[in-house]
Length: 90
Image (cartoon, rainbow, N blue to C red; front, side, top):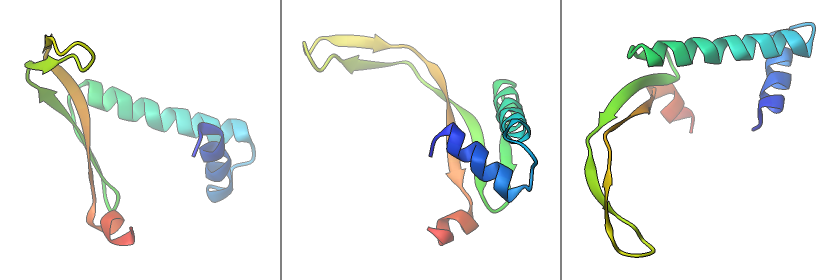
């Protein structure tokens, strides 16, 4: 599903008057999610799941083309854990 499709569906489900209102709500939601995760906090949405930031350790990898070992630096990533209701609905 693309952003345009999500905005259209959000407009219909939330009974919003215009696509601009739906897009503002969409942008606001993802801004809140991004800002919260950047601070290192987790987000739990009851019935849907939770998002949290995890740290990955530095490790050694291998270039698949040449076979040469490369150093992969430590990084942060977002981990999503689905909630019980979401798992059961699938």
